[in-house]
Length: 243
Image 1: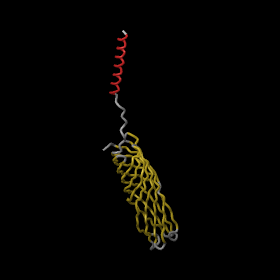
Image 2 (image 1 turned 60 degrees about the horizontal axis):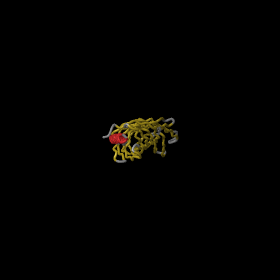
Image 3 (image 1 turned 180 degrees about the horizontal axis):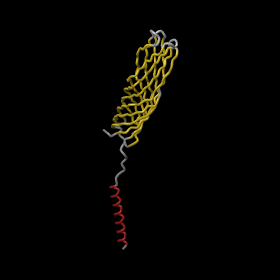
Image 4 (image 1 turned 120 degrees about the horizontal axis):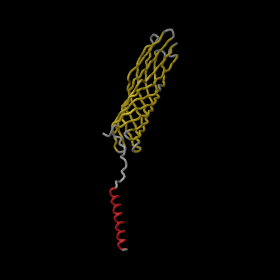
């Protein structure tokens, strides 16, 4: 009887151990989530602030020269789109953006000519860039990058020269100017194709030179305008997929 009981107990224990071993064999191993891929097309929106400068230089016949540097600060906002390609821990891409701008400023200069006042008004009405980006993955989800390329924008400059008892002459310049943009930023992946970034850009839209008349007979002003920008903005991107 004791031998039968011992044999039965041993059989039950062996059967249970075999069942547990079989269960462990078919149980799937834990698989970590796939690493985020930066490769793909994306689009997004941004908002920020720009600290700009409008530099005005004029050489006036018989009166010497004047140089003014005016702040043209304001809120900016717009959209961007681009493409990224990830190779190892590096990401290369191209991005273009278009911005609405509330930047404007002006100043008044007295005494350029006898009894003459010069008033300037400057605006950057909109601008855009087309840039390459090259970055390094600080972590799989954090990209630190530099960027450089072309910049363009609509600049509007007014210069009004008023001489007491003579009258005023208004010189207006409004045109799309082109230059360059350079900067950098940090972008973090949020998941499900979304990412957020903080970016700095320096923009130089080049110089414009021209000659205009003044209220004083025989006096002309050779003018030079130049617009530059220091931009800080935040953006939100959505990646369409991996291509």
